[in-house]
Image 1 (tube, one colour):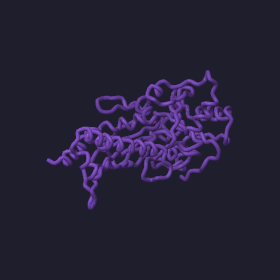
Image 2 (cartoon, rainbow, N blue to C red):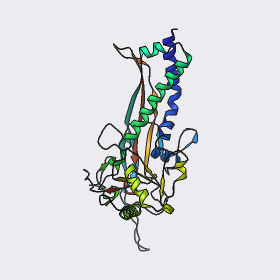
Image 3 (cartoon, rainbow, N blue to C red):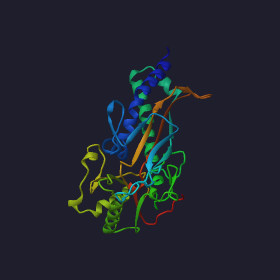
Image 4 (spheres, rainbow, N blue to C red):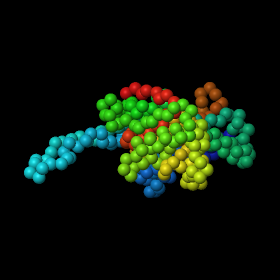
Length: 333
């Protein structure tokens, strides 16, 4: 076997070994997904009974399905002791469906790179390491941007598509025109708000999203608005969230919720999440799976395709909200 072929086999073997780990690495490099996994209240478990919080690994299906209840049971109510009780058949469950989104990338090497690094064990190791790091960082960036996608139909249904500025829209195939209680919560404050105005808007939205013991547990915003929130707090109010700080993420607290920032989040938006009502899903058979090595036709180039199927799903929009700073945009139903 030639040195070049040996190196190609080493890269293929290493990529396949690395593949099961990349999901954890993608999650660990994103504050929102890390919180979903470690502290999300979805009560989900992965392989080996490992807690996955609000990240679900699904076994298949053409779409991601969530059973939701939007219709009241008309058989429930107060009656006189001798009155006939209702026994009507009431279909109280609807199905919200979300499409799988297909994240695709290639780990690529040129033939000359392989030839130059095929004889030295040290160079082999460095080249393989570089291929893996590049593939992983690219996937981290693609998934991270997709979490806040607004317009690309091929990408993840990002938070702005699920939690709209005016609460309306069609999400999971269900329209708020038909079901009023499928709207998400929202609150608007003026552009360039004073610290007190921002805190007042946050307080109003927090109360809207609170239902009994079910409350917001994660708030994500743009770095600029995060800075405004931080400046609105007195030194004695600036409590950091040690759960995320220990993982290397900066996070403040608002009531019991962690407040994080992400540069991909739309400017002047602050999303209030209840992780009982929103999950992030991976397809069990397409979690950054590495495909067969391919030599590109007519080129001295080799590629290893890497694929992941994933998307958000929402089971209760009324538990989610967005704080809009400035003018809100309307959503089409």
